[in-house]
Image (cartoon, rainbow, N blue to C red; front, side):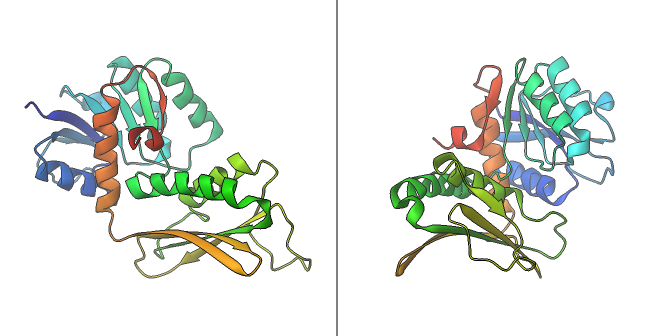
Length: 250
Protein backbone atom coordinates (compact mmCIF):
# COMPACT_ATOMS: atom_id res chain seq x y z
CA UNK A 1 0.00 0.00 0.00
CA UNK A 2 1.34 3.42 -0.95
CA UNK A 3 2.00 5.64 2.03
CA UNK A 4 0.24 8.96 2.62
CA UNK A 5 2.78 11.67 1.85
CA UNK A 6 2.90 14.55 4.36
CA UNK A 7 4.40 18.03 4.36
CA UNK A 8 4.91 18.87 8.03
CA UNK A 9 4.91 22.55 8.99
CA UNK A 10 6.56 23.24 12.34
CA UNK A 11 8.45 19.97 12.14
CA UNK A 12 11.12 21.11 14.62
CA UNK A 13 8.68 21.88 17.44
CA UNK A 14 7.45 19.55 20.16
CA UNK A 15 4.25 18.48 18.42
CA UNK A 16 5.87 18.45 14.98
CA UNK A 17 8.65 16.20 16.25
CA UNK A 18 6.11 13.85 17.80
CA UNK A 19 4.16 13.67 14.53
CA UNK A 20 7.35 12.98 12.56
CA UNK A 21 8.34 10.23 14.97
CA UNK A 22 4.93 8.59 14.88
CA UNK A 23 4.78 8.78 11.09
CA UNK A 24 8.21 7.15 10.78
CA UNK A 25 7.04 4.25 12.96
CA UNK A 26 3.90 3.79 10.88
CA UNK A 27 3.42 1.84 7.67
CA UNK A 28 0.72 4.30 6.54
CA UNK A 29 2.50 7.67 6.51
CA UNK A 30 5.66 9.28 5.18
CA UNK A 31 6.86 12.82 5.90
CA UNK A 32 8.35 13.90 2.58
CA UNK A 33 9.59 17.25 3.89
CA UNK A 34 9.22 19.76 6.68
CA UNK A 35 8.90 23.55 6.86
CA UNK A 36 10.20 25.43 9.90
CA UNK A 37 11.53 28.93 10.56
CA UNK A 38 14.30 27.27 12.58
CA UNK A 39 15.29 24.26 10.46
CA UNK A 40 16.92 21.38 12.33
CA UNK A 41 18.31 18.03 11.28
CA UNK A 42 15.65 15.50 10.34
CA UNK A 43 15.36 12.30 8.27
CA UNK A 44 13.68 14.40 5.55
CA UNK A 45 14.42 17.77 3.89
CA UNK A 46 13.52 20.79 6.03
CA UNK A 47 12.93 24.19 4.45
CA UNK A 48 12.69 27.66 5.98
CA UNK A 49 9.70 28.60 3.81
CA UNK A 50 7.03 27.02 1.61
CA UNK A 51 8.57 28.70 -1.42
CA UNK A 52 11.48 26.24 -1.20
CA UNK A 53 9.37 23.07 -1.12
CA UNK A 54 9.93 20.77 -4.13
CA UNK A 55 8.28 17.55 -2.95
CA UNK A 56 4.77 16.40 -3.89
CA UNK A 57 2.43 15.42 -1.08
CA UNK A 58 -1.09 14.24 -0.29
CA UNK A 59 -1.71 16.42 2.77
CA UNK A 60 -0.19 19.22 4.82
CA UNK A 61 -0.11 19.10 8.63
CA UNK A 62 0.47 22.39 10.45
CA UNK A 63 2.05 22.17 13.91
CA UNK A 64 3.85 25.52 13.76
CA UNK A 65 2.52 28.94 14.87
CA UNK A 66 -0.64 30.75 13.84
CA UNK A 67 1.44 33.55 12.28
CA UNK A 68 2.43 31.17 9.46
CA UNK A 69 -1.23 30.74 8.43
CA UNK A 70 -1.23 33.11 5.38
CA UNK A 71 1.82 31.50 3.73
CA UNK A 72 0.67 28.00 4.60
CA UNK A 73 -2.81 28.50 3.15
CA UNK A 74 -1.46 30.19 0.02
CA UNK A 75 0.72 27.12 -0.62
CA UNK A 76 -2.04 24.61 0.21
CA UNK A 77 -4.61 26.32 -2.04
CA UNK A 78 -2.13 26.72 -4.92
CA UNK A 79 -1.31 23.00 -4.76
CA UNK A 80 -4.89 21.87 -3.95
CA UNK A 81 -3.52 20.24 -0.81
CA UNK A 82 -5.75 19.25 2.14
CA UNK A 83 -4.56 20.92 5.36
CA UNK A 84 -4.77 19.72 8.96
CA UNK A 85 -4.32 22.76 11.22
CA UNK A 86 -3.23 21.86 14.75
CA UNK A 87 -2.14 25.36 15.77
CA UNK A 88 -4.17 27.64 18.05
CA UNK A 89 -4.38 31.35 18.84
CA UNK A 90 -5.49 32.49 15.38
CA UNK A 91 -6.55 36.10 14.97
CA UNK A 92 -9.93 36.95 13.45
CA UNK A 93 -8.20 37.77 10.19
CA UNK A 94 -6.37 34.43 10.15
CA UNK A 95 -9.61 32.64 10.99
CA UNK A 96 -11.26 34.32 8.02
CA UNK A 97 -8.40 33.19 5.77
CA UNK A 98 -8.97 29.62 6.94
CA UNK A 99 -12.70 29.83 6.26
CA UNK A 100 -12.13 31.22 2.77
CA UNK A 101 -9.49 28.60 1.96
CA UNK A 102 -11.89 25.84 3.06
CA UNK A 103 -14.11 26.78 0.12
CA UNK A 104 -11.34 25.56 -2.19
CA UNK A 105 -9.61 22.78 -0.25
CA UNK A 106 -10.55 20.47 2.64
CA UNK A 107 -9.35 21.90 5.96
CA UNK A 108 -9.55 20.26 9.37
CA UNK A 109 -8.87 22.56 12.31
CA UNK A 110 -8.98 21.64 15.98
CA UNK A 111 -7.65 23.20 19.18
CA UNK A 112 -6.92 19.67 20.39
CA UNK A 113 -6.05 16.69 18.19
CA UNK A 114 -6.63 14.08 20.88
CA UNK A 115 -9.21 11.45 19.93
CA UNK A 116 -10.15 11.12 23.60
CA UNK A 117 -10.75 14.85 24.06
CA UNK A 118 -13.07 14.90 21.08
CA UNK A 119 -15.05 12.01 22.52
CA UNK A 120 -15.09 13.96 25.81
CA UNK A 121 -16.66 16.93 24.02
CA UNK A 122 -19.58 14.75 22.99
CA UNK A 123 -19.96 13.38 26.52
CA UNK A 124 -19.96 16.90 27.95
CA UNK A 125 -22.73 18.01 25.59
CA UNK A 126 -24.81 14.98 26.51
CA UNK A 127 -24.23 15.56 30.22
CA UNK A 128 -25.20 19.23 29.96
CA UNK A 129 -28.42 18.28 28.18
CA UNK A 130 -29.32 15.45 30.55
CA UNK A 131 -28.43 17.18 33.84
CA UNK A 132 -29.97 20.54 32.94
CA UNK A 133 -29.37 23.96 34.45
CA UNK A 134 -29.74 22.69 38.01
CA UNK A 135 -26.04 21.79 37.87
CA UNK A 136 -23.29 24.41 38.06
CA UNK A 137 -20.49 23.90 35.53
CA UNK A 138 -16.81 24.48 36.33
CA UNK A 139 -13.87 23.64 34.06
CA UNK A 140 -10.36 23.09 35.40
CA UNK A 141 -7.34 22.69 33.11
CA UNK A 142 -3.68 22.08 33.95
CA UNK A 143 -0.59 22.36 31.73
CA UNK A 144 3.19 22.63 31.95
CA UNK A 145 4.90 25.77 33.20
CA UNK A 146 6.00 26.86 29.70
CA UNK A 147 2.51 27.15 28.23
CA UNK A 148 1.88 30.76 27.27
CA UNK A 149 -1.89 30.99 26.92
CA UNK A 150 -4.55 30.59 29.57
CA UNK A 151 -7.14 29.23 29.57
CA UNK A 152 -6.21 26.48 27.15
CA UNK A 153 -7.92 26.22 23.80
CA UNK A 154 -9.30 22.87 24.89
CA UNK A 155 -10.91 24.39 27.98
CA UNK A 156 -12.67 26.85 25.71
CA UNK A 157 -13.76 24.00 23.43
CA UNK A 158 -15.32 22.29 26.46
CA UNK A 159 -17.04 25.51 27.53
CA UNK A 160 -18.35 25.95 23.99
CA UNK A 161 -19.72 22.39 24.10
CA UNK A 162 -21.73 23.26 27.21
CA UNK A 163 -22.86 26.56 25.68
CA UNK A 164 -24.27 24.71 22.67
CA UNK A 165 -26.79 23.20 25.09
CA UNK A 166 -27.04 26.03 27.64
CA UNK A 167 -27.09 29.03 25.33
CA UNK A 168 -27.21 31.67 28.08
CA UNK A 169 -23.91 30.51 29.58
CA UNK A 170 -21.39 33.19 30.57
CA UNK A 171 -17.68 32.39 30.82
CA UNK A 172 -16.10 33.55 34.09
CA UNK A 173 -12.28 33.43 34.29
CA UNK A 174 -11.61 35.10 37.62
CA UNK A 175 -13.66 35.71 40.77
CA UNK A 176 -11.10 37.14 43.19
CA UNK A 177 -12.22 40.75 42.83
CA UNK A 178 -15.99 40.17 42.95
CA UNK A 179 -17.87 39.36 46.15
CA UNK A 180 -21.17 37.83 45.08
CA UNK A 181 -22.84 34.47 44.82
CA UNK A 182 -22.21 32.39 41.74
CA UNK A 183 -24.61 33.10 38.87
CA UNK A 184 -26.80 30.28 37.55
CA UNK A 185 -25.53 30.67 34.00
CA UNK A 186 -21.83 30.93 34.82
CA UNK A 187 -19.21 28.52 33.50
CA UNK A 188 -16.13 28.94 35.66
CA UNK A 189 -12.86 28.30 33.82
CA UNK A 190 -9.67 27.81 35.86
CA UNK A 191 -6.04 27.36 34.79
CA UNK A 192 -3.13 25.62 36.52
CA UNK A 193 0.46 25.92 35.25
CA UNK A 194 3.27 23.83 36.64
CA UNK A 195 6.00 21.30 36.04
CA UNK A 196 5.76 19.13 32.95
CA UNK A 197 2.01 18.47 32.92
CA UNK A 198 1.11 17.62 29.31
CA UNK A 199 -2.58 18.42 29.65
CA UNK A 200 -5.41 17.68 32.06
CA UNK A 201 -9.02 18.80 31.71
CA UNK A 202 -12.00 18.26 34.00
CA UNK A 203 -15.58 19.40 33.57
CA UNK A 204 -17.45 19.47 36.88
CA UNK A 205 -21.25 19.40 37.03
CA UNK A 206 -22.12 20.30 40.63
CA UNK A 207 -25.74 19.73 41.63
CA UNK A 208 -27.67 19.34 44.86
CA UNK A 209 -25.84 16.75 46.96
CA UNK A 210 -24.00 15.25 43.98
CA UNK A 211 -21.12 16.04 41.66
CA UNK A 212 -20.50 14.57 38.22
CA UNK A 213 -16.96 14.99 36.87
CA UNK A 214 -15.85 14.14 33.34
CA UNK A 215 -12.12 14.31 32.79
CA UNK A 216 -9.25 13.59 30.44
CA UNK A 217 -5.53 13.33 31.13
CA UNK A 218 -2.81 13.34 28.48
CA UNK A 219 0.23 11.21 29.30
CA UNK A 220 2.38 12.43 26.40
CA UNK A 221 2.25 14.49 23.21
CA UNK A 222 2.19 11.26 21.23
CA UNK A 223 -1.59 11.07 21.55
CA UNK A 224 -1.88 14.45 19.78
CA UNK A 225 0.39 13.12 17.03
CA UNK A 226 -1.80 10.04 16.65
CA UNK A 227 -4.83 12.30 16.31
CA UNK A 228 -3.14 14.56 13.75
CA UNK A 229 -2.27 11.57 11.56
CA UNK A 230 -5.79 10.19 11.91
CA UNK A 231 -7.11 13.59 10.83
CA UNK A 232 -4.77 13.59 7.81
CA UNK A 233 -5.97 10.16 6.70
CA UNK A 234 -9.58 11.29 7.11
CA UNK A 235 -9.10 14.57 5.23
CA UNK A 236 -7.50 13.30 2.01
CA UNK A 237 -10.77 11.58 1.14
CA UNK A 238 -12.92 14.68 1.59
CA UNK A 239 -14.30 17.42 -0.62
CA UNK A 240 -13.41 21.08 0.04
CA UNK A 241 -14.95 22.29 3.28
CA UNK A 242 -14.27 22.99 6.93
CA UNK A 243 -13.97 19.95 9.21
CA UNK A 244 -13.22 19.38 12.89
CA UNK A 245 -11.67 16.53 14.81
CA UNK A 246 -15.19 15.59 15.84
CA UNK A 247 -15.86 14.70 12.19
CA UNK A 248 -12.74 12.51 12.08
CA UNK A 249 -13.66 10.44 15.15
CA UNK A 250 -17.26 9.69 14.17
